[in-house]
Each structure stands twice: as C-alpha cells, then as structure tokens.
Image 1 (cartoon, rainbow, N blue to C red):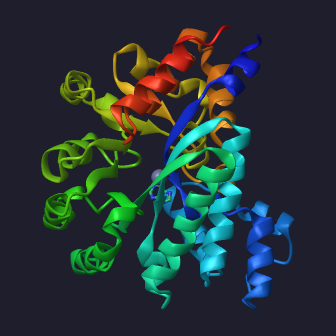
Image 2 (cartoon, rainbow, N blue to C red; image 1 turned 45 degrees about the horizontal axis):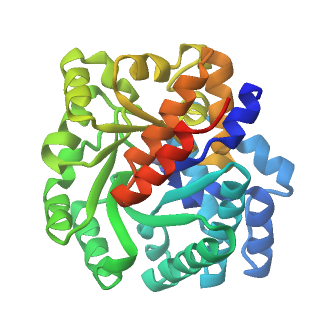
Length: 334
Ligand code: ADE
Ligand code: ZN
C-alpha cells in the first residue's frame, strides 16, 4: 500500500475543527443568496483570493464576516452536514467540533438555533455515515469575561449536547488567566475543558491553560517547544496537543512545512494529534493535513499510526470505543 493509500485507510478522530471554519465559499454564496444577505465578494474565485493571511487576526476578520450569513437552523445544519461528508471521504470516524456561540448570538441569532442545527447534523451523520461526534462550545477570548459567563449560562439548558468548553479567537494579549473564573464554573457544571494556547501566544499561555483553566487538552500548543520544563510536563502528563499543520502554515506560525515541529514533538514523547482547524480557509481537510506533513517531514507508517492512535486516545469517547479504534489501527496492514 502506498503512503497515500495508508493515510486514506487509517481511521481518525478530529479534535480541533471550528465548524464555522468549514464554510466552503460555494455554500456561503448559496446561503447568502437564500437569506438575501450581501457579501463583499462577486464570485467564489474572489472569495478564495481573499484567503491570503499573514497572521491569525487577518484570518479571523474574514472568518467572522463569513459566519454572518448563517441565520436559520437549516443553515447550521447544512454547514455541519457538508463537513460530515468531508469526514466520510477522509475516514474521520469521530469528530469533536468547536462552535462559537457568541459569533451568532451577538448578531441576534438564538443559541437554540445554532445548537439545534448542529445537533441534527450530528444525529443524521451517526445514522447515515456511522460517524460519531461531540460538540464543544468556545468562548471568544477578545470579548469580556462577563460575556463568557453569559454564554455559559445560555448553554446550561443544552448541557447534555455539549461535552466541553474551549477558548479561541485572537490569542496575543488575551491570556487564559482572563477566563479563570468562568472556566472554574464550567468545570463545576461538568464540562470538559480545552483551550487554544501556544499557537501565536507564548509558552506561558500554555502554562496558564494547564494551571488555571485545568484543561484536558491544549489546542495547537506548538510553541510549547520553546520551554523545556513545559515539554517535560506535557510528556509526563500525557497532555494532548491538537496540532493543525496547514493552519500553522497559512497563518505564518511556520514559514515552511519542512520546519514544522510536529514530528519532533512526537519523537520527544508529546501526545500530538493532527487536525484541520478551519479547513475551508487553510486549503485542506484531515487527509490533506496528513499528506502535507508526511511529504514535508518524511513520516514513517509507524508515526502515522501513532498520530491516528493518539487522536482516539485524546478524544472524549469511552475507553471501550478507544480500544475498538486503536485495535483497528494496529491491525491495519501496510
Ligand atoms: N478560531 C478559528 N480558528 C482559530 C484559530 N486557529 N485560532 C484561534 N481562534 C480560532
Ligand atoms: Zn482552532
């Protein structure tokens, strides 16, 4: 089997994908049209040309603008369903999707509209595609602590449908410490915890996510390598990092995939996983990310297997389901 076929055959879990970041320009145009919302682009090609980012903020500005066309429950369903079809193509058998409630509630869209649309897509994906999923809601860190508390309160009636709480948006200048209290309450309510840290921000933000937010996983975390003490802690605690290679390249966190540190992190014993982040904006879904690092870093089939095993180990599925998928990966013939 070629490396490419091996990647395609590997069952995978995706643990870091923003559902708003899977919004393909074709669907964005279709939904804008049916909702009679103007978007500042004349064509799909023009949208794609705008996807030229020099840092996280330059991407976020366009990403939030794109989400403005999502109004009705059906829009959220269509968005998530299109992503599930990509999962099926890439053998992503389980996904833990982020959504940003504040991006929608701040525009007057009900929390219920968002979650009901996403949940219905999750239910249909289970039945029609055999793909399992969890939802994780993220607080926007450029907004206030008070706004995050309000969002947490709005989520409480949907506690059974939301497995965890995360932290995303502009990282620099918005350290995890700003949200220590709201995450403490989220933990008390029984939510699992994740946070973006160490993407553009320093290793110090990863320490804060661990010590103050008490995360179960770190999203990105690639800058942890700058701090040997932090690296030792991540290894000792088997703390997962949900790494997003194409995202790091497109947002200039690395300037060349050949310089990406995911292989070094893996070799040093860090529990790294591969993810797509905002695949519509960064030029690829799960398998594109696997292919890009395999080509640039010359990954072996054993390393590919380890990355896929890590994705299930780090997921929020049951121990029994983890064992089921891990044994399938171990028994996959090359
Ligand atoms: N929101 C969507 N994608 C993000 C990323 N890569 N970092 C922070 N916030 C995000
Ligand atoms: Zn992200």
